[in-house]
Image (cartoon, rainbow, N blue to C red; front, side, top):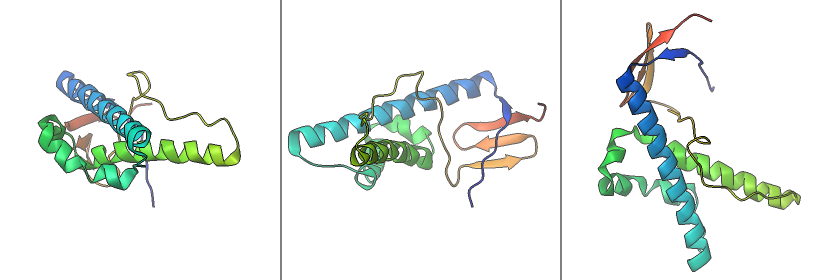
Length: 141
């Protein structure tokens, strides 16, 4: 069963910085993975998918230690998001619709990240996010 929660959060200035930084790094990773797929197909005729790119994430963390500051499932979800964009692209082609190749994401187009299974907890008045901290929840409105 899938659950979703929606709260108004009151992060501290440091938590706001961490959230914005995480979004920026996830957007950068998404765009790099998209470029990797385009290049692999254009130059080598190789099709990359979620599994191939997700298995590279540990080596990405070794090469770019900043990614160690982001929960692993958040990074895996970036690859899933890109896979979902390609799945929708190929489905539109199959249906004969205007395809709309997946595009690079600018700051205004990549505004969320996901903890799909773990790395988060609801603890009283706080939402605990791994690598970000305990963010106060506002129960009003």
